[in-house]
Structures are given as C-alpha cells and as structure tokens.
Length: 326
Image (cartoon, rainbow, N blue to C red; front, top):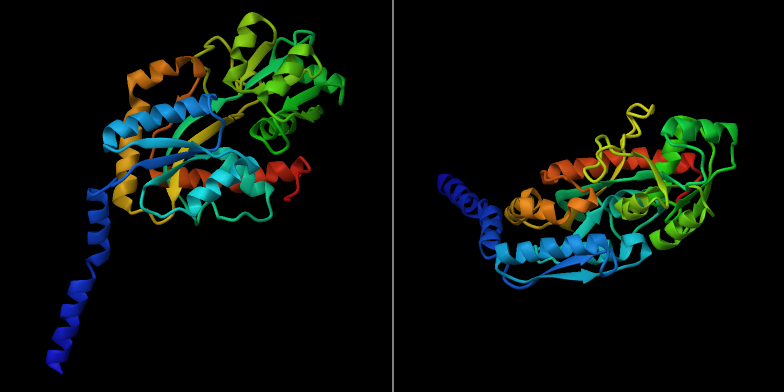
C-alpha cells in the first residue's frame, strides 16, 4: 500500500510542472516564424499607419517579420473572427478596438466569437478624442451656446456619424442625453462622406476624430470642445466638454492589441513589454504628434476589465438611442 502511495506521488510530481514548463518553452522559442497582425482598417488610414509602425518595432524586437494583414468588413467582425479561430501560439495578433470588442458586441444578437472568452487582451495602445465641431453657419462658439441653440430649436440641427452604432453615433447620443438636447442623426458610410456634408453645411454638427483638425485650422469648420478628460495636445487652447459645462463627460475611442485566447502567458507578457516600449518611445510620440493620441500602455487585465465594464454602459446607451441588437 505504501509503495503504491509513493508511486502515485511520484507521478504527480512528474506531471504537475508540465503545463508551465511547456508554456515557458514556447515563450523561449517564440516567435519561430513570421507573425501576422490583423488590422480591421483599410490600407493607408491613420490606424493602419500606426499599426505598421508597431509591426516594424516588433519585427526588430522579436527577430521575425511582423506582417500587417488588412481584414476589413462586417464592422470588424471578420478580423476578430479570423484572430479568434487562429492557433493560440502568439503568431497571430489583432488590433482589438472599442468598436469591435464593445460596440459591435452590444449591437449584435450573436457573433461567431465571444470577445472575452475567445480573444485575450495584450495591452491597450492609444485613445483618440472626439472634437465637437459645427459648420460655420451655426451661431454657436461654445458648448453652452450649442446646447442653448439646440434647446431653442429641437430637432432642427442635424448631426453626422460614420454609421449607426459607431463611436461617433454613440458619443453624440450620450452628449444629447447628458445635455438634454434633441438633434437628428444622419449616418454616413464613412468619415469622408460625413466630413464632406459637414463642410457643405448639409449637416451642422459632428463629433469627429483628429482627421477633422485640418479643416478646423483652415476655418472650414469650427471646433467647440474635445470629448476627452484632458485637452488635446494638438489643440491645447480648445476646452474639454467637461470644462464647458457638462461635468464628468469623458469619451475617447480606444484601440488595443489582442490575440486568440490560450496564448501562453509568457508570450503575452513579452508582447505587452515590447509594445509598451513602443508606446513610451519619444520617437513614436513625436511621429504621431499631430494625431492627438493618448498613449495607454497597461496590463492585459486592465484592457480586459475595460471591455467588461464598458459593455453594459454602451449597451444602455444603444438601447436609449433605439438601437436594438440585430
């Protein structure tokens, strides 16, 4: 009996370390081939350019090519599904965004993946604020004046977004709720079309990202405030919405780096460390100085908690805006 007990303990001692040892071995040999970074945006856009900069940095640090693969469509579901179904060995990464991981999840009854079960967080990367802009024909030069105008003319102001359920749409709906105003939503298929109609005065208001700044500086549109908790580095004289009379208003679209669930923790930790170095680099921040990025290096757990905590918040905003899951 005692011999059998000793044999059992010996077996346990042999098998218990296997998982950690294998994970550590995978990390030491990682990467063993090129790594692909799936980006749910078209080639040449601001986020594609940022992702390619990150890919080049990781290529130099990891010793294997990190290749950007643009997978556009289905509101980022195609890119996230491709990542979720890839082997969990660290050789497939994906740009995991607020739009794809939070907004899309709240807007769909079902998805071919679960953003918390099938995709693992590596780190948040950046956040970009919205700029509250109006056409010059609008007689408002501050948030308070815009709110007063909208209250005096309910339903007479039209605001643009890049689509129903987009960050632009939801941020504006939250702004409407917090200020008690009524504006009419006009969805477009992308930034270019939305900005064209804003410049032409076909719509009067838009909460838009940093891509609107050249038009602000040229005087073609007027900026009233930035939506984030702090002022934009690109326009330090522009007040925040919170400073302008809407206490606690703080919205910025965030982007992160994710991978298929099951990637060994040592690999996640290495990718987190190398990516953090890229975000903290003075060269990186100088390169994208005009983009008003807020850099968000953090732990995998912090990014996961961000997703988990935002899902009920934005689901509530969607339902209040009449957006039901499809």
